[in-house]
Structures are given as C-alpha cells and as structure tokens.
Length: 464
Image 1 (cartoon, rainbow, N blue to C red):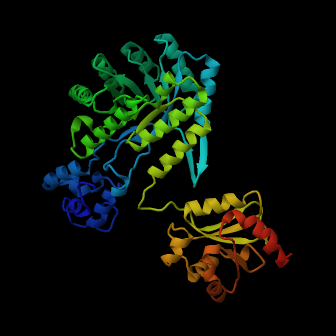
Image 2: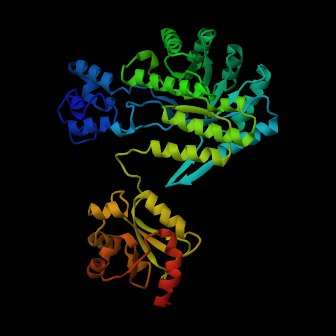
Image 3: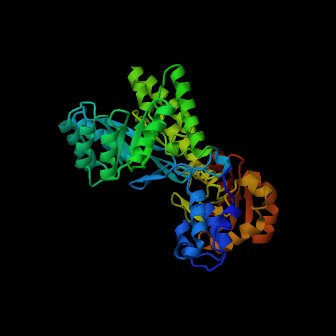
C-alpha cells in the first residue's frame, strides 16, 4: 500500500482553505496531490511562507515517488510508488524502444526507422505506439555511428538512445544530437566517470549497467556523488535457462528495495533488454515469439523501459495490449464520451443502437457493425460501466435513456421512433417505451449478431 494517506498529506498543508491552488479547500488539494493532478508547488502559502517550512519539507519527502520519474521528449518512465497496481495505480507505461544498428546500410536503416515511426494499433480508444529508437554502435566506428545518428534524427522525432560502452563513441554521438534529448547506454564499472561527465554536460538520462544488485547500487552511489541522478538501472537480461529466472528475481529485488526499503541508490527506473534473444535464437519466427513472451514477463516485473528488436505485429501487439491493461487506472473505468455516434453513412431511417460508455463495450459494438450496416449508436453515460454492471448498479435505467434522447435530440437524426437496446438490458424495454414514447427492439446478447438482427428484424418494419 502507499506509505501515506490522504490525511497524512492534509496535515502537512497550511489548512487555510485559501483557494489559491484553484480548489475549494485544502482537503481537495490533498486529494489532488494524491492523484498527481496537482503539484506541491501549486500551494503558494506552503512555499511562500517560511512558517510552513517544516511542513513543506516533510510533504516533499513523502509525496516524492519512490521511483524517480525521468522524462525525455514527453515520454515519462519511472515515477511509481507501489508494487501492486491495485494498491494505487501505475502511472507511466513501459516505454518500448526498437533497436537499429550503425552497421545497417542507409536504405535499410531509414526504412526501419520509418516503420518504427508509423507503427500504431488502435484499441479501445487509444493509439498504441512505440516510444523510441535505440541506436546500437556495433561498428565501434565514430564516423559510422555519427552518420547513423544523423539519419535517425532526420527521419524520426522519437526519443533516441545512444548505445555503446565506449565513452569516446558516446561523446561524439552526444554532440551530434545535442539539440535533441537522448538517453545514454551505458555506464559500467570501467567507464562510469567519463560517461557521467558526458551525461551531466548534456543533462541526459544515463543507463547504469551491472549484473548484481550489490555492484549496481555501488555504481549508482558513485555516479550520484559526481552530481548526476537521472539514472536508469540495467541489471542484465538473460533469456536462456536459469538466466531468465535470475533476471526476473533481480528486477523484483530492485523494485522492492526501492519501494519497500526506500534504498536511495536503487530508486530509479529499470531497463530490460529482451533484444538479446536474437543473440541466441537463429530462427526468425522463434526469436520473435521468444522475445515477445520474455518482454511480457519483464513488463510484469517492473520494467520501465525495454529494448526490442522484432517489429512484427504478431510480436508487438500482445505487448502493447498487455501494457495498456497494466497501466489503465483500476480506479477509473476506461470510458468514451456519451453522445450520438455515426457508423457508416446513416440516414433518417437508419437504426439507433443503444449501449454504455464503457470503452470496451462501445468499441466492440462499433467494430462489429462497421462496414456491415449504417447506423447511429447512442452512448449512455453509465460512468464507464458495461451493460450488466450498469444494470446491477442502477446506472443504466429508463430515466437515463430518456435524458439522453432529450439531451442529444434524437428526433433530429431520424424520422422513426425505434431504439435497439442490448439483449442483456431486455428487462428495461417496457419501462423505456413508457417513459420515452419510443418503441424498443431488444437486440441480440452478442453484438457480433447485430448485422444479422438488422437484416432480419429491422427490415421487417419497412420504414422507408
């Protein structure tokens, strides 16, 4: 559970209810802080009046996430405060970077970068995309690496990760893309002084690599002593045999040390590198599948950032869906905006389907009818609940249907007075007819059968 409560935060506020934060009172502000909708700095008295200095320092200490939040080109990683999503929520989805190499020929490199750019899958109202490009220096040639960076920068606006253990290569790469935010991969026991110097100069996040928890904590302490704390932890990704178990155990230990023990040297985002699968597996499709399931495991084990190689949809899609599910706030159902939606090219004689504003329900219905029938969908505000939960919780009622018919002026869309309600809501049909004056057709239980239902039942009405 979170280490502080709403009352813990409230007690550290001035308690004057001055409204300078834009909210009605300090309790509302405390709630907004807990939900990360406001920042402590939004409370002006707390920061302007020195009599609140002690409270301010205590508040900043408890409100700061256990895992440092790092932002690069609008992408945020880390910033988490709990081990389990149901305790509070996870805030910043795992960033997925796809690798490219400076040993690729120019056309191949540019083609791959463009494919990374345009990779997008629409699901439940969201465009699921990739977050960045990891440029690996396999040539150990500064000129080739610099040319590859230029090609990446010219053809993509995504964040870039410069990958090499050679500080001289990284230094040249950092200068080449100095006008663009980037991540440096990676500092280790041999190169950390020079890598830290480069990272500080460019204010760049620095990945710290070591293969034991003891070594990585010692390394982060040394780097912080040099004055740099934008760090990302890589404790190694080992996909073969017992190595995978070791990887998972290490990542869990890192996160527990950061959140449960508040161990400062490990309070940073974690990087996982499933792309190493391609070093072991030679069969293309086997490598894609293996990389996908290993990435899924590591995403569940607190990976804040991942480097992948495969770009096949069958590999990436499960990861994007898993990520969307993990990082959806369990306290807030995924919703679409209530209203009247057009599917295809409906006219005044087209059917009106009624459904709830739970996103998965709406998009399931929309996908099942799109391209098959022209219709309207009346989306009711059931506070993000699906049909059965909305019925059970009295969020889907005849009165609600009446309110939406009047609010969205359905009579302006069609000349008929028929509604098609979900089969699961059949018990409301009579009450809806009585309260609205509209006739109700009870649709099928499964939205995939709506096109057949329209073909058989709607056309019987012979409205035109």
